[in-house]
Image 1 (cartoon, one colour):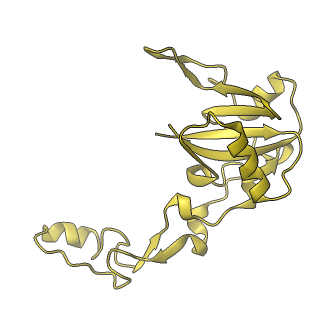
Image 2 (cartoon, rainbow, N blue to C red; image 1 turned 90 degrees about the horizontal axis):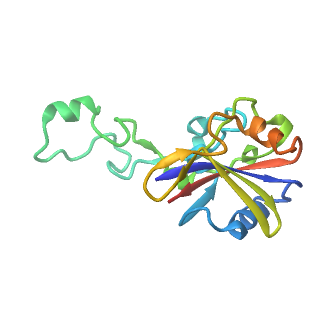
Length: 173
């Protein structure tokens, strides 16, 4: 399952590579993670699906808009407008793992939208990282976690943090 994390850092990373280094150094963020990913643009409501760079020639119909529907219900083919991947356009959206990186996924806390919420907040302080979740696993059930019911800004403020930067991370567990 994929989860949305926000990593708080005091100083803005100088590059996407530096930010990814911070993410990797933290560890304990699942077996896979990526800056942005499925939560790209959450800081400021950017829509990655509106970026033409996040599209490619459909690999199912090879850009024709129609695929070979051998032994398939004709109604299904009609409902898909010729191709169930691109819906007849010949162009498909790339997987979130292949989207063009978005600089807004590393943003000053004061510029992040007020109602931003996520599953996990990590307060990154070098080798000392604090993890907070909306839910915590007890070994037999999920229970309310420290983040439950709070926006990211509300939660960080409750920890005495009102400045710095957030890095949006998509992680898998």
